[in-house]
Structure formats: structure tokens, C-alpha cells
Image (cartoon, rainbow, N blue to C red; front, top):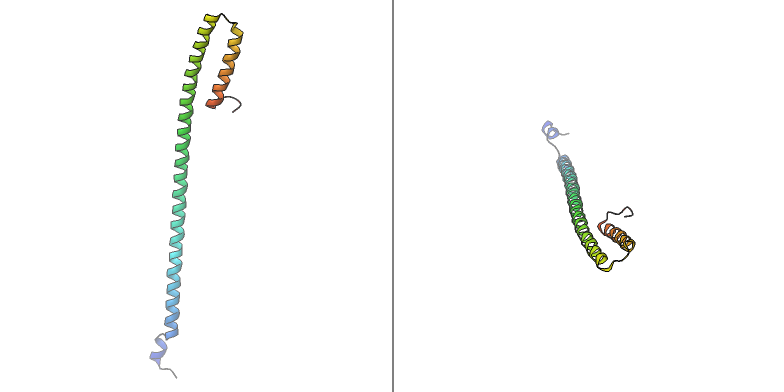
Length: 117
């Protein structure tokens, strides 16, 4: 029979089982910590991607605005040149009106402001 002292002290098997259970609890805690870190990284990645998207959209809009202004300036120069040619040549204005409409459509297409784009 076992003595009372032997029954209160854990056996080697119980000690080993206790160590295994403690290692398992520690491992589960580490897994939870890794999950939290992964969720944090995903959230940071999404926030960064949103920031990049907003910056890209702002850049595109600024570029579109600059292109529109440049296209309109060029259109005005072309119109001025056409008016000078018309005065010099005395050509029928309807030819230049059609050309002006065509130029306007091309500029709108290039600037991305036309109704069809």
C-alpha cells in the first residue's frame, strides 16, 4: 500500500501530464496572439490599400483636370488659327464649323470628358 505522503505527491506521469497541459495552454495562447497579430496586419493592409486608392484617384483627377485645361487651351489656339485662315482665305464658315465640332469631340475624348467615354 502507498503511504499518505506518496498519495499527496504527484507521480512522474502526473507531472509529465501537467507539463504537457501547460505547454498546450502556452501554445494556444501563442496561437491566439498570432491570430490577433494577423488580424491587425490585415486591417493595416486594408487601410494602406484604401489610402493608396484615394491617392491614385486624386492624382488621376488632377491629371484629368490638367489635360482638360491643356486641351481647351489648344482648342482655343486652333480656333484662333482657323479664324485667321478664314479671314485670309474667305472660305465658307460651315467647313470650319464642322472642323471645330470634330476637334471639340476629339479633345473631349482625349480628356475623358465626352458623353461616350
